[in-house]
Image 1 (cartoon, rainbow, N blue to C red):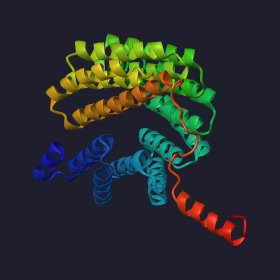
Image 2: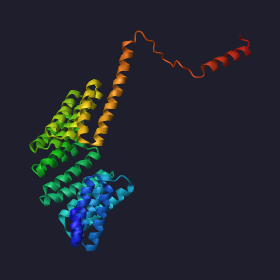
Image 3: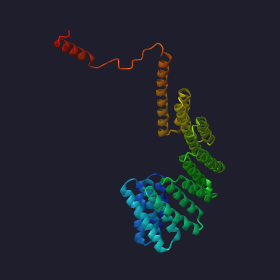
Length: 359
């Protein structure tokens, strides 16, 4: 916003358009889809007025990505796919290879998001080829991830895993390792879908090592959350609990009280699922105490909600245990003791029998 405001003050319309595109991308990443779309549309219109073709193509490609990330309706699909195709044509006509590659990648995302995985895979491969020609490893990796997503949507998990693995390999050493680690997490997610738990855990180990090396505690915690899903899918509750507790330690050591409190809530949730209600309540109480320090109302509400669920579970378990303990001494009726209308039916039957001379 500051860059756009500065461009407006200086009267530099081209700089304003570029700043609007960057702002739109940032807003989309924050989940503010409508604001992002407004900024991208305004930027595209301004670039058209200025005959700034490269900027207009970038705005159109971004429009496609916004629709792919946040759109759900048929109108969103139409807008996104049209914008992507226009961007590809514009860059191709202008002979801007990198812009064309970005537009093809954006088209692949849009096609995949709106149910056309085969076309998405085709466009992703075209983008990969262009990025390779430009020796742009980061760009090629993003296209690989788009290809992986397309294969995954088409149900070909083996090819999806191969493409995501290629993305991780291309990103080795780039951008502080964060994107490489996230690509290994993508590999793990695909392998989990395929129920290949060992491969999923191997990919997560690579991601965790990168985050540890770069001292990224949030990244480590996200990997540990993924590990929990894998272990639970494999039926290893103990390992899932170990990962959950380790996430608490990672966040505590980093001094991230909000993340630590939420990690404790996850531990209490697992204890609840395992019917270990007493321990779950103790952990949840500690979590609420920590979250109260952060003054984050949403997190505090989640903590009290967990406490409520645990207290409800405690009452339920107490009732069930009481019934089991007294099963030999109690008669539990199979049918309702109270039968609404029974007295009236009995009287009516008595009268009917009298009419027939039965009594």
